[in-house]
Length: 197
Image (cartoon, rainbow, N blue to C red; front, side):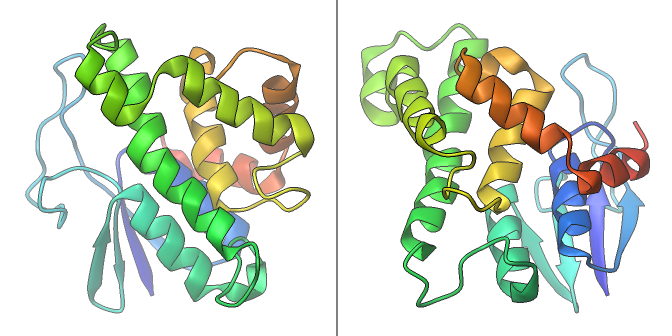
């Protein structure tokens, strides 16, 4: 049994969406987390070492951080075809988007959100918003999803950011259409019903 430690309307919401896309059986355990507005607190029942979410327990093994959980789950449920398997020529592109999301997209948008995005060392390390937007627009300008015609776990990550705050993704019709496609998925509707927020 999979157990997802979840705080409503947080980064763990996208993992509920992914679990629904995969058709996986899972249990939700709602935990408290500190929130930006000062509410909430670390929850002792949360196994995440930093008391954050998401945290997934799979047969007694703890997996934390969204990217690790997405890769683990898409590998664990290959029949759902939400992550290319080893040997698939799209595997490298898929892993690159997962790493790019964690290593570039999240830092760039969070630094911008905090007003810290103009420091030259940070821009050199993580890239600028212009470069990030160009990469996303190039991918989605050429195809409906990050891997072409195939929806994947990488799309769950990217779309969840736009669902949280549309301005965190590039402006334009290609991204609007991408979000509309993702937002219309039945698994997302099921996930939102279970989110509890």
